[in-house]
Structures are given as structure tokens and as C-alpha cells.
Length: 327
Image (cartoon, rainbow, N blue to C red; front, side, top):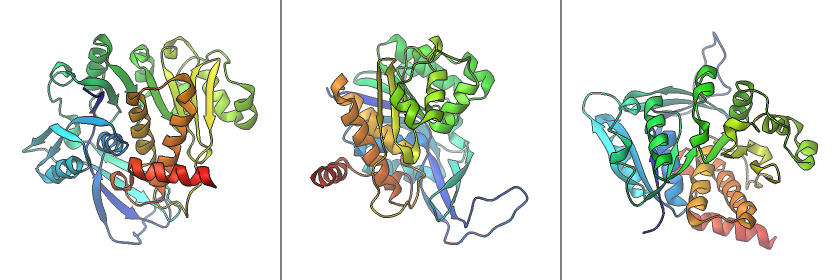
């Protein structure tokens, strides 16, 4: 049986408001286009990205009666949705997304059915599940239960702690149970600020080119994270992956074809392609190849509108990489 990832995460109805700029405190602005509703939620987006990258994936989550169409759309994208429950009383989670002409976004979340417990992890983390992907848009006790069960049963754990936990929760979180920690630059800086300073462990190349990111990465090199491979996404600057003090990889972002249309799903797209690469097997010499595939996929994602619907397929990413290599 092929390796399979279980995503225990959120499903949302994303509502997009196109605005001239992100609204400021005390300000009222009008949207500049039609209200758009699409399938979303970090769990749904990342599961769809795994499927489109060519990986096997099962999603465990919940929607309300108003969100049953999400199950159908995810199923059509190749995601296993038997673990997605439909609640008769609670509304589906919502994401209210402000989107500027430059592709910047600001998001307000309503949890809705994402806070339903849905049974113990032993009901879901069964063969052929080999990998577990978690985020922070569901109940924290559920996240911890799934993480603990997976670690005790030899299942690889990938954690994208977004939205980031409060500082007091960061200190208590069992980071030693996380095999792969995926962060963006803002989450990494906040995580570093909430934890004791670590040992300096970055390379001179990263320190010279990205001193701010090198400082954050240095502060994350401490015992509580020593079991984690840390993947730090840097938006337009690319990605840094820290495996050990002697094994650090940096890859710049992919060159876009045209302008940035919507950055909403880029991080989830990167995560899905990264997890698929892990399931396909990763050797030391393959890290840069995997990271290149991830940044190309994320770059293609921001060229399109939407979150789940903007994720490219594996064939599309292959074609883009082939074009890049022939130039």
C-alpha cells in the first residue's frame, strides 16, 4: 500500500472581499468587486495540495449542512473525505478574506464545525496512514491527542502551527513529538520570541544574504526543537530548511509568470507539495530538488485566484520546471 497522509484539520467556506487596501482601525471601506465564495480552510487546502501533487491523502474534519458542497469539491480534487462529518446544527467554519490588488491578504476566522472533537485518533490513524499533518484551526486538545498517538505509533508528524499559539501555550507544547515543523517568517519570529535563545547554528551564506532570518533560525536551535526539521518559508525570498547545524538548505523563490494575483493559498500549496515529497521518500541529496518543486508550485499558486482552486497539479509543476531548466 502506498504511503498515505491523514490531515486532521479545518474546512472553511472562504469569502473573498477585494479591497483597495487592508482596512485600518476605525475605517470603513467598500469592496471593489463581487463577493466570491470558495472552498478553503488550512486542512482542506493542504489536503487538496497533497492530492494534486500526486500523494494519497485522507481528511478528517467537519462541515455543517451549509458546507456539504465542500466534501464534493474535495473528493473531486482527489481527497479522501470519508472522515469529514456533517453536523446538522452548527455552521461550517468561515474565513473572511480581504484581498488587495497586490495580492496581499488579511483573514478573520470563524471556527464553526472545526471545533467538533470527532472521536479519538485511534479511529482515524489506522493502516495505511504513514504521515500526519496538523495545523492550528481545530481544537488544541484534538491536535495534541493526534500528535501523541501518531508519535507513539511510528507515524511521521508534520506540524504547521498556523495561526500561532499564544506564548504561554508555545512553552507547554510537546515540540519533541514533531518531526517536521513548517513556519512562515512571521510565525518563526514570534515562536523565537516566545522561547529561550538557542545556540548559534546558521551558515555564513544565510547570515550574509538574510541576516534577519539567520537570527530567527539561530534562536530556534535549542533542545525543545532538536527533533524537528525546520522549514522556514520566506515568501518572495524563498525557503530555508534546517536539518542540523551541518545541513542547511536555502532555495530562492520561483520567478513568476505575470503578477501576483492572490497569495492566500501559497503556504498551504507549499505544505502539500512538501508532504507529498516526504511520502515519496527523501534522501539527503534530494532536499534541494524537493524544495524547488515546492517553491515552483507555490509560485504558480499565487499567479491564480483563490486558495484551494489555485493549487497546480503535479503535471503543471513538472511542465513549469521543465520550461525553467530549458531556458
